[in-house]
Length: 205
Image (cartoon, rainbow, N blue to C red; front, side, top):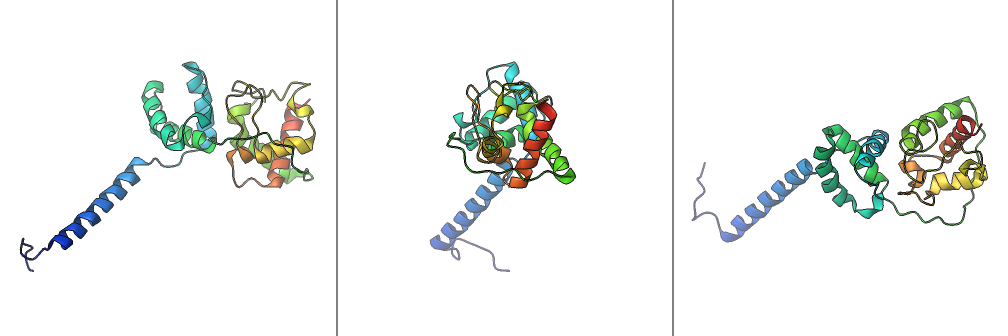
């Protein structure tokens, strides 16, 4: 095998080699630097239970997604979070990092409920909604509506509530907006109807 010496490596060849090495190192560094996606629901729960102990809740739109990475991993040490909890919180914050304008109510109709949709509604609530709305429906964050309030949010028409779920909504006084579809891009209109039906049957008594 011929040895590489100063005489058989031209300047253009050296330049190309350095560029290739630099690109490879940058890709490896990015892969190691960017955290794996976490769990949205667990992240919301951890965020609501930990952040409020030390300071007021921040709106998720206060920082860009990349800025949340730095902030969350800094706060990991202060809050004593595990690596998985940190990734979960970051996923929750980045997914919720949307600016929602409370526009006019769009057309949305309830899909008839069945035993299957009832089960889906409970699952959807436990995964997408419980972090902010709480297992008891009273809300875990400032400004989140209390579903058990007889004169509260659930007195609104189903059409309006479905529109809020599908398109996102920010309640007056809330520190953050509910992202469209509760942060679950795969949420279907049937799922939205199912979770609303579950919420009304569980908390509006």
